[in-house]
Image 1 (spheres, rainbow, N blue to C red):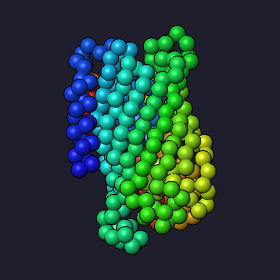
Image 2 (image 1 turned 180 degrees about the vertical axis):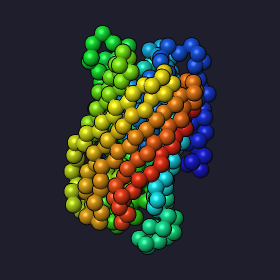
Image 3 (image 1 turned 60 degrees about the vertical axis):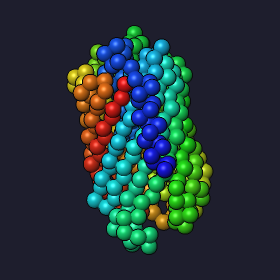
Image 4 (image 1 turned 45 degrees about the vertical axis):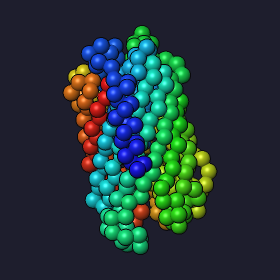
Length: 287
């Protein structure tokens, strides 16, 4: 019932806020894509840009589905983001993490799925990372992501202190059009284990830590951007070391309604399985 409700809400948002893409004043790819937790940005980290193609007097929205498949796990993230007047952003993502054979090893059962819901909000504080080309000052935004795990008892049995938590982050993003270059720095305060899939806090540490995240992209054409992301992560659980994440991505925007992202992601150790690398694919539909 919950999934059906979210799907209906997602479709309603797109219908209610739909704007003829040809009339939007924002440049192609100027809202980024939907990162794995739902916020507008790259695949792994949010950017300061507001999601959708709505300008200062418009509302825009995107819906997305992302699949991250490694040799031992598979995660599917679905959701949407709504941008209001190029100032505020609200997002939702439902993540389902398939443990496959590892689930049986952990005593959870073959193909056991860990699930969490992520509710996000972001506000552009000042600056415009694209239109203000006369200076190098970036666009600055502040955001948060409230994450609630659906199997709290399970993740707590492996050392997590909580089944819910809030990530706070500050973004600085700048596009230098003359150099076809995008740069982003995100500072995230978090206690999440594996972005929340393994709960929050742990037997090793249970305090907020400030984790930097970087993105750099090159605009080969107005429709295609490729780049690199790196996300530092905390290490709270004694049961398994947690590694930083990185990816090399390419995003092609067919138009302002459809965009496809394909990436190679290195995820390191994820609960009993080391050196996890994955194919990351994401389809975004929006206005």
